Amino acid sequence: DAKTTQPPSMDCAEGRAANLPCNHSTISGNEYVYWYRQIHSQGPQYIIHGLKNNETNEMASLIITEDRKSSTLILPHATLRDTAVYYCIVRAFTSGTYKYIFGTGTRLKVLA
Amino acid sequence: SAVISQKPSRDICQRGTSLTIQCQVDSQVTMMFWYRQQPGQSLTLIATANQGSEATYESGFVIDKFPISRPNLTFSTLTVSNMSPEDSSIYLCSVGYRGDVNTEAFFGQGTRLTVV
Image (cartoon, rainbow over the protein chains, first blue to last red):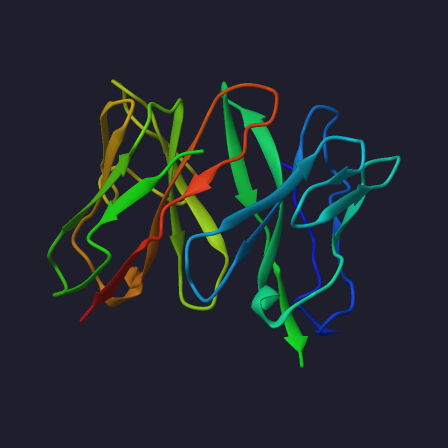
């Protein structure tokens, strides 16, 4: 299973862009990168996912490097409510099923 | 999307007892998973619940300790057996759809278990 590596914590000023990096150097060609966040021990919330192209939705943008070994989640205008733990996940396909394997996550603190 | 209901939302249990956690989904899903989140830690996959057959367990987790049932495409249970304080964690149910495109997993709000 591909493993992800993230910085343990980051701070961001309110209103500024938050850029959260993730390394997934062992990712396979058909494995997607997913991002989730968890606010204060609630269930993880889906943010965005991608395979090799950059993706954008109403919550965030996902930038994946050309070699697919790393990615960056961008929250364009961070608010206090974006304070959470952000998880970068590689969805692995093994034994005939998909599995979502969580890394250690980045604790993002948005500062007023 | 899928709406997931987990019961109970929290419980305090005596060591040596067992607790069964229920996960109900509002639509048929292909995949159901159970995760454990120990205090201050990330989520660890316990097993994939398979409909009509034995669950597929991850390394470090065994059926005797965490028996799982999945009688249909919308319901699953996880039992934490012979509990000890080390089992105090949040247990989360997750569901997904098999397929290669646009299939994110959805998570319940979890069951917060404290073993005393």
